[in-house]
Length: 579
Ligand code: PEP
Ligand code: MG
Image (cartoon, rainbow, N blue to C red):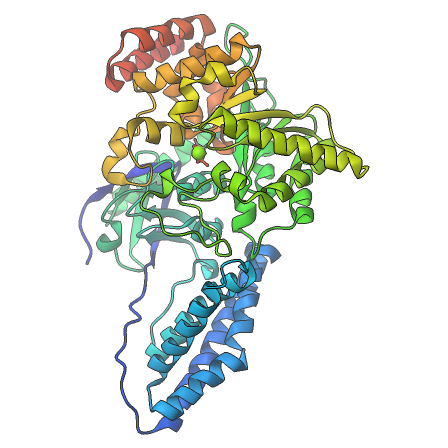
């Protein structure tokens, strides 16, 4: 059903797009289990469905190889092995013949059995992952039997706007920005990981619209204004022209910012800060360099694990870290050890369902528990340390003892490598993310032991406000300028400076144009954001005086009670600076 009018959502990645809708929705794969008389016909149907599924997977694999690369295509190679596995399909045929069951029901019964069997092999990640493959492939064969089309983001080969209820980070990774001009989802917030990935892929995105999926039809042309966070459903010719003009204006602004690509990140009164970028994979380094970032303030290594069909080996990780470090030369690169859990899952590391995944088994909690995988990562990191300016950071630290344990493991691994005769850098800084309020409150204690802090506001805000970052119903509580948050940030920065250490910020707040003046004034040393926000932030900073921003921040922390008051104060200060 098409609606007239506009739909609002949360602007998650800047830009404007006008294109037809590509609905990426879960298809209906329900069927009845029935008895059949003509079993040969049923077997024949199954065989035809297998042929169709094989050809679909082959197409997806070829496209994925071309547009996304060999690594991303690997999962489809595995799918081809499954669909052509005679053992699996012979069992389905036997069931059809012996039980006179329809192909759909027989397929489901056999695949459920295999999936359950493999999924139960808890300490065999390879088998676990086979379970995911079998599930995926049997769904495709089932869809072919039912004559239902399965959407596959990797095969999109014309300009579209992807509309989905939600996009997982792995769906997002499959989007090819040459064709996917924007995406819009029902759920999610500015800091959900698909939103973060959209920014690094430079795909305009609006999330958390609640209703977009039910408001559009496949093929319908819509306008996505991801600067304002609104979708125009049935644009008139005049609206299309208006937005084409707006898109070129935005383009012109970007060209203005682009002039600052080799400029230093410095305020009007000469105070220098570091404007760094966040990355998810070594490929993102291109965007970091193109946008003239001063370094990498957050390398989310969990994507290395998520892009892989099994735990990435020490050598695979070493190569990835080395590539990033070498491409950045002597610029700082903060590599965060893996942060799986929350909304980031691994097919080969099955974790029990949790009521509150964001408060659960996640990040350093898994690393300290599963030391085998943590040690592999630390070895890879330390081996890569000689290729650049490496800084290692632990995520989700709540207590000093967690930090001490992680640091001790790092020291042990270093000693082990040195004993093996492997060269390891002696100047690797070791820091933590401040994203749990407990750590923020005790920052003065942590500051004595760490080399640096990086404030993860995406989580720090969700934990301080007790508002799930994935839940659009409470997204109004994602309040970066709430005086409570500013007070925590101030304490963290002041504590680090008192011990001669530095503080960065790698949560989305660091690139928020209203937050930047405040953070400058609070003394933040390093701002790490989506690469695409670096130049506009550099342009903003160049217009501001540090001393004015210090006064602004002091007022915000001491005198303001609400976000609105802080916003008004910042708007006034920025307007004055630009006058
Ligand atoms: C954060 O929490 O602010 C952060 C940068 O980490 P992530 O978004 O990966 O949880
Ligand atoms: Mg976090």
